[in-house]
Image (cartoon, rainbow, N blue to C red; front, top):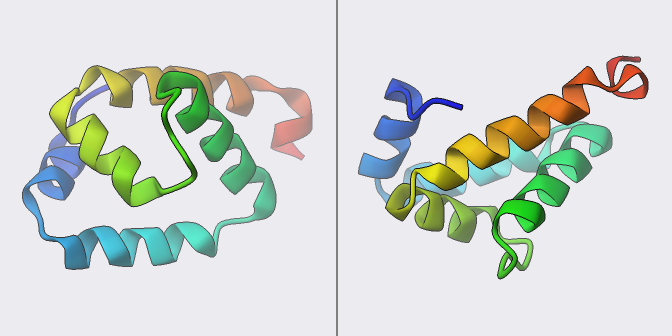
Length: 83
């Protein structure tokens, strides 16, 4: 749960970068996408499935990144998730 250089760069970049990251996210395996979407929904109840909008919110409130990392870490710890 860190606001690291990567996230700092994302928050400083333009919509083009956000759109490119979203395109990459769409190519993730379903299991990972579902876990991230579930976590985004958990940490930001107003989340409606738009990862770019989540990024905007998290750049304004860095605690959302920390909560997202914590939630996703719980998925990663799950034995089924590791298969």
